[in-house]
Amino acid sequence: KMSRAALAVLLLGLLCLAAAQVNVRGTVYAAVEARSGQSSDCDKFVSLFAPDGVYASPVGSPVAVGHDSIRTACEEWNKLLGPQGNGWYPGDLWNAPTETAFSLRIRAVASGGCSVNLEGIVTMSLNSTSGLIEEWKHYYDADWNGPQFHSKCGA
Image 1 (spheres, one colour):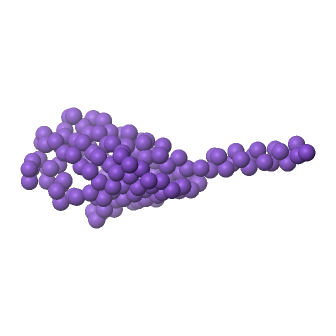
Image 2 (cartoon, rainbow, N blue to C red):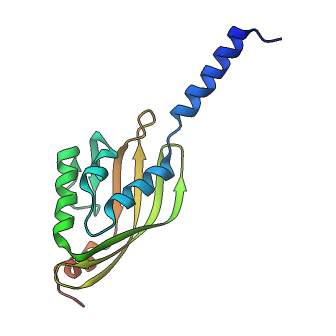
Image 3 (tube, rainbow, N blue to C red):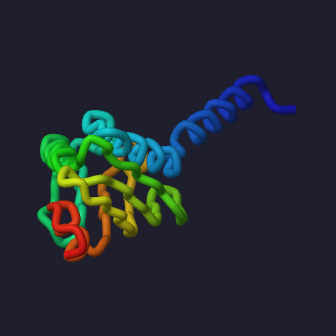
């Protein structure tokens, strides 16, 4: 027989283990939900990041580090959007306990009226304790998509 104290310790350990698991898929869905709509909810998006989180979109462009810088990047995105806004749609998701890679399609209407369909891959690393995003890297063809956002349709 197991003593009550041993059973209590076992249950407490299982509860701690369950609480420590990172919900990678939930974080992905929360991030794309925050970025979808008439404009991105930058406060919600930033709240998913660690205080010193890194955001690179697209990879190769200047990196945003920390909440203020990530909020600025998000707000700059909003300035590119027309009144119809945008939708962010995750596709295939490949997960590890604190990392993921997923395909991402963004459908948007730029402020000049151009429809933009941006497809790429996002890699994301999460803190194993807090579950907050430590690093977000978005890979896409910025040379092709950039002109679309700046109202040069077909360029």
